[in-house]
Length: 207
Ligand code: GRF
Image (cartoon, rainbow, N blue to C red; front, side, top):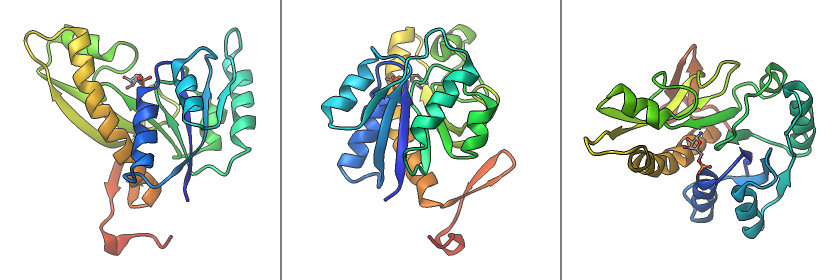
């Protein structure tokens, strides 16, 4: 069974969607640990309620390298195939990314490379785009920038507020993230430069 870790900082609805996909058999994986840099994150409480291994490692006041060392020490306890950032609100250090090359995924609420960074849904509305959405991508050393695994498109309505648009994007996030995790864990992808290419069954690597 493939093992994943989920890193979060807040609400944790993407984490819940991943846990639900595993519970109902859509995603074949095991959540070895849920870690939050904010001990008060509601997502941690949800993880505990689900009987999962939930670990708080407070990041307040710590510099990136020192914090990531703690994180790496915790993660090294598990035999992880993939680390999934789900609303994890900290940049990862180069050392962290080197430790898990092409084994870290993130979800972002826009069609990257449009609107990276904070408040992507507000940025999309303010720019006046007619379509936005969400992106699951591998994490590299740049913010919201690594090779794209899957995207989903959401139409912007004339009467949208940031909240209404965010809610429709979130529905797509929940669907897309589990699908992308399943795809990457299955080994049915090949990364060529920036392009993530889904393999046909004939090209599949032996497991
Ligand atoms: C999501 O919109 C995700 O795309 C972004 O942060 C938000 C986290 O929401 N990276 P949740 O904590 O998963 O509910």
